[in-house]
Amino acid sequence: MTALPEPGIPTAGPAETTLGGHVLGQLRRLGAVVGLSETDTALYGQVLLDSLAGAARRPLSLPPASPSFLSDDHSPVEFSLACTPDSVPALRVLVEPGWAHGDMGDSARAGLDAIRAMAVRWSFPTDQLDALEDLFFPAGAEGPLALWYALDLRAGKAPGVKVYLNPSAAGPEHAARTVEEALRRLGYGKAFAELPPAAGYPFLALDLGAWASPRTKVYVKHARMSADDACALGRSSGSAADIRYFFHAVAGSLPPFDQGLDGTARLLRRPALTCHSFTGGASEPSGFTLHIPVRDYVRDDEEALARATAVLTRFGMDPTALRRSLHALTRRRLDDGAGLIAYLALVYERNRPPRITAYLSSEAYAVRPPQEQYPRLDLGLHDALRVS
Ligand code: TRP
Image 1: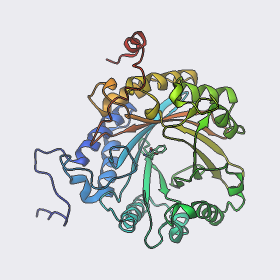
Image 2: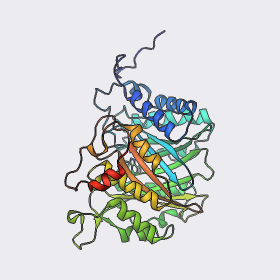
Image 3: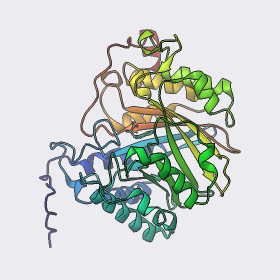
Image 4: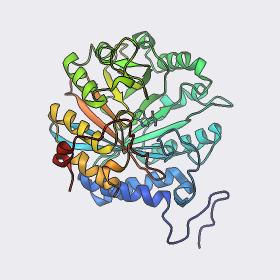
């Protein structure tokens, strides 16, 4: 029996590339880069497709199903590579299961269904998520997201599952209160006071499933961040020298149009985010991450890769897997667009060496053209970094 198409979801003809086909190909090639078996990637690919339901069969010739905030071109999928000094990078995939639904209530339901299906499949409890439903899924919820999930892909094992929720679901004016109340319900009654001043709270995230020490994470937006600001924010987690190096290496030499009135180099384009994680009921954060949207501060991805290579090398990590991953994602030239590397992040977790994470776009729908206001990467360096 052939399955009937779901109402309202266009299905591609046999020769057309679908969204699902596009991201599955990327997942398979990325899996090979980080040494996952074909069996593992096939299983994870199926979970990804199941969670997108009919939207996975949407032909790429149609525009994105909704103007997802997950990525610049509204693809509902983003990959990331978490690099550590002495091991193969971990591959993760971030997904908006409710992508096909413009309405945040419908999107939330699709998201919750996807998480519950995973909870059954991998036998993990969802009580933390259940305890927050009224806060994050109110009637008439606002965007720009209802629920995203990420899978930490692990060879031969159940993945780590992370759920991302929108503190502004009841309106941005209630975001701080929502974060505070969510932390309280999760057993972190004093944690909110430990958070830095925020220009917004884009996400609250929960680790569900197989984690040694599951975290609750709060993402904070910072307007006009300088290197000094970044060092102050990360003071209790990392060395100022490392954080300063990371800031300048990723943001680049910030031309005059990226400087504040006081002449200090600041991130005046897309803002940086920090992430503060809490574990085991303690109110002091157990981790700190600095996310810089490198794509807004480079001419193109050749330059973004050069910056990533510099920070990985400085922190003792091999940049080869990142370079290969970019070629697993796309066949375009790296200097033909800006955005394949969306963010670079410096991650501190207690008792672990610093990590660098690169967030990698699927570009299912569009490539952002190079930003010509930034100079092209110096040609000598360009050739030295050219990838085969
Ligand atoms: N696209 C959004 C942004 O650029 C959300 C997002 C996707 C994000 N991946 C991310 C934010 C990784 C921080 C880090 O903000």
